[in-house]
Image (cartoon, rainbow, N blue to C red; front, side, top):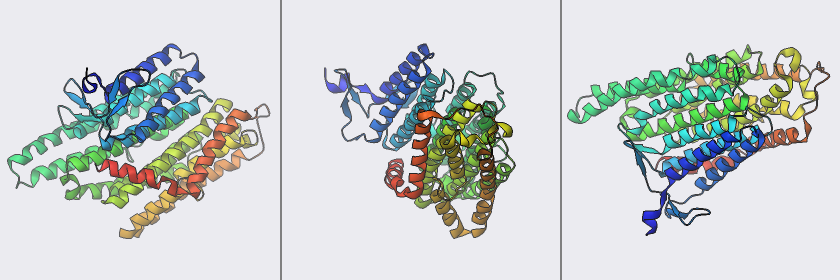
Length: 477
């Protein structure tokens, strides 16, 4: 039998491997630490392998098997086709690496016995979405439906087996559920465009519907409620994983829409609406952070402020803005995971994160306290944090066309920075809980590694130049 006939398609291999691993880890879920380490090994190995894969040589031998894997072979089921294309490689690889990092951190501080299998199933859904190349509708217009399904599954992931409030997780369902009908109606107008190419109404209405649908999916203020609520109610590492995977899929969707439907960018309404939405989101994130007292809620509002700046950049056409969008998202991932790692340890050691319990916590948990503070400050663009370079470059680009929005965003970031500095005073104040034990070698090691990564990117952000350039080149095809 020839290699072409016996070769296994890459999408089939990824789906089977991730699903079978998740099923096995569910059976052994009581061994939480081992499950998380195995999940990190599988997703991290797949992510690193896909990042360096070369599609010019599509046939690769399958480990421990005589069968080969065909990187370019499609998988067609139920009218949908999944296929690895150049533009999907960095998205799939980054999704897997984010999952691997979250699982590795969860191996030290538990996020629930079901975290590892649920994380694998979640990233499996986002990998399938990134690999989708055809369906009953164009894949960019079908994406909101799959995002709604993944948001529904995320409700259970964010619960992490705890009997806590579902307010935040359930709010994540609203944006994709509201956006999907707009994309369906937009498809009807797009379908009418070849019948009357001279009619300007169809592309204009289609653009308005797609732009409104994208805005709903991005969740700007006042549709932001899920982010701070989830950050307060759900386990930190679970929150970071669910948020980053969803937002990475949104950035991929936005780019695919611009490539598939060029008239969307030409109409100009996207720039106007996204500028307003991004500015309002960045302002509200900074101002609301100034009044937040709960560390999780403060982290959520700081992340909202950072997301508003990314939306502002999406309103600016051109490759420079996309380079900064990718830079900001990369730094955002590092900052969110750093803060989540520190916050997860604080939550595990203290229980309720009340001001009384937090007072003096840094005297016993110095590195984990610093990880949360530095990661949160990175989301606000504080100097010497991971996010500073990205925020400063983004504000410079925005100021080239109009200095006022850049100045407003800069002032708004002061609210989040002020709140983190206020929280730092509590952390480094006199210790109230004398029974609080020290963080230990393993806890200090994990927090120290995350701090080292954050500080390294703050000092040498050029380390991300090659991955960002390579990602943008791949997205453009």
